Length: 293
Image (cartoon, rainbow, N blue to C red; front, side, top):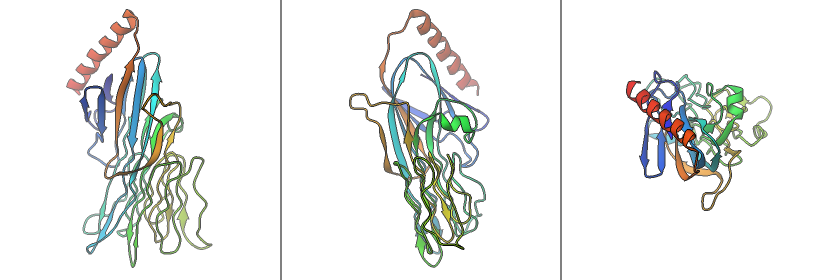
């Protein structure tokens, strides 16, 4: 396995490995600006696991509105020849009213809150088959394992918690007027808001535009709503299988903070000497690149 960071100027290679498992963490210092891991896999079976980033919590005068947890998705990816995949890990930021207001979107689909009452949503975590910036359309459609992210929380008169991300459908955020929308497999859930209430539905890969609290990213992002917590984004899997005890998963989890991911090497195929030689040369090249970057 060859692991590089797509843009060394934006981050570092941040992973641990034990035996046949590689665990990846957010590689950048900035919660908003980052880039993916570039991973080359040899022929074999690999178990890809992703955890979406959690909400932003909103802390005000000792009261905390909890944002939603990040979701979990997994599946076995079969590789028949050398294959590059790209791993985007979701960003995360909390909101403390004693600090500066966050007016920047969260990496990989989380939207920000509009004032010091509204925490941002988290960013999704996903593996993709195509390169490109995180919100490029063809790259988004090539996602094979996507873990949705949680929506942000809001403290005003009431505490409005954000919705959890993950699963076929994310969860809505609590609202003082109406609940926020959540991501589904083919769009955003129908709104429960009446005429005159500001709300914004999530879109493909992105939380809803910030009208109040931020929403979570995902296959489809969660929604934002006036005076309420943000909705959670949905998870998704495609082009992966179950293999033995390694099963396809798309569900809620209790992940808090930044997203994370892992790759477990289940089985490597026997390959020809030429392919093996090529792969070893690429490993050496990658090792040198990591040292120099």
